[in-house]
Image (cartoon, rainbow, N blue to C red; front, side, top):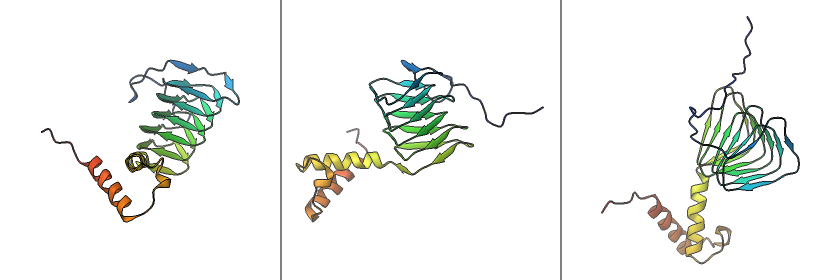
Length: 170
């Protein structure tokens, strides 16, 4: 007997993703030069060329192929992605998937037998958010406009330290 080395795993609600998607791009469907925006989750089983910017989760099934930039709360990859990925939650790259991407996320999980080629910035989004809040407090539109004066650096450090302190129940 011969066995296929690639593990075929159907997506099921028994996985660690407890997400019901409302939109599905079915296998056999191709979208060229499209951009997708929305406030819910999506499952892609077909081929999608374009950027995805959603507030929910993005699920790429084994037959799914996405070439473009992704911004989502969480990303679950069983298929193929080429482009950058930014999430506020985690990126989960399952066995048998192929990811050629730079990833900025709060967490990443890569299973055995998954191909990943790119750079990871883990936890950078939280630091960036703290700096943007500090910039807003200092009256600046974005962090790049902050001057590296002793006063502004001390203020940013104080805000970052305050944000990392556990809240007292009293």
